[in-house]
Length: 357
Image (tube, rainbow, N blue to C red; front, side, top):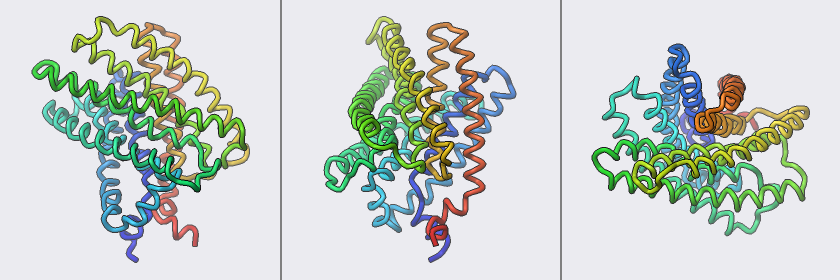
C-alpha cells in the first residue's frame, strides 16, 4: 500500500478541528487586538494558514469517500469518531467568517461574498446530513455503553449553532439589495440555532448523567471536556449575530433582550470554564497522551473567548474586556502548544497503523 493511500485510508476526520481552532484564534486576535497593526498582521497570517490547512485536508477527506468508503462508514458509525465528521463543514463556516471579519484587507468584496455563499450552502447541507446520521446512529445502535458517552457528543450541536456565524455577515451583505435573500439566510440561521441549542440541552443531560453516576472517562478523551465551551461560546456569538440581522430586517425593534439572554448564557460559560480547568488539572497529573483530541482544547475555548469580547462590548465593561485578554493569552499559548505537538507527532498522526505495529 502506497504512503498516499495509507494516509487517505487512516485520515482522521478530526483533522478539521485544527481549521476550526486556527480560524477561531485568528478571529479572537482580530477582535481584541486588531487595532494594533502587528496583531492584525498576525490575524491575517493565521487566516492564510487556515486557508492552506483547509485546502490540504480536503484532498484526503474527499478521497477517503471514494477509495476507502468502507473504512469511512465504519468511522461514521463509531460513537466517538462519528461526531468529528462534522468538523469539516464547520471548518468551512469558520473560514468564511475569517474572510468577512479579517479578509476585507486581504481579498476583494466580490471574492468574499461569493466564497461566503458557497461555503454557507455547502456547510449547512453537510451539517444537517451529519446531524441526522450521527443522531440516528445514537438511537439505532444497541451496543452503546456508558463508556462511549463523552463531551465529543457536543460537537454535533456546536456545528448547528455555528451556522449563523457565517450566515450573519452573509445576510448583512444581502440587506442592501435583496432583503428577501437576507430574510432567507436569517431564517436558516434561526432554524440551525434551534436544532443545535436544543440538542445541546438534550445531549447535555445524557453526558452529565454519565459523569455523575459513573466513573470519569479515560485520560485519552479528557480534552473533549473543553467542548462544553463550544455550544456555550458559539451560542452567545450566534445569538448576537441573529439579533443584529433580525433588527436590520425589522423583525425586532431592539437587540437588547436577545443579547441579554446571550450574556446570561455567557455567565454559564464562566462556570463551565472553571469546571473544565479543574477537571483538566486532575487529568494532567495522571498524564494526557497526545492525540488529535488535543485540538478539542482550542476551538471551544476560542468560541468562549470571542463571546467574552462580544459581552464586553454589549455591557461596555472594561472588567470583562480584560478578562477576555487573559483568556486570549491563554488561548494563544494553548494553540501554539497543540500546533507544535501536532507537527512533532505528524508521522504518528498520519500513519497510526505503523505506530501500532
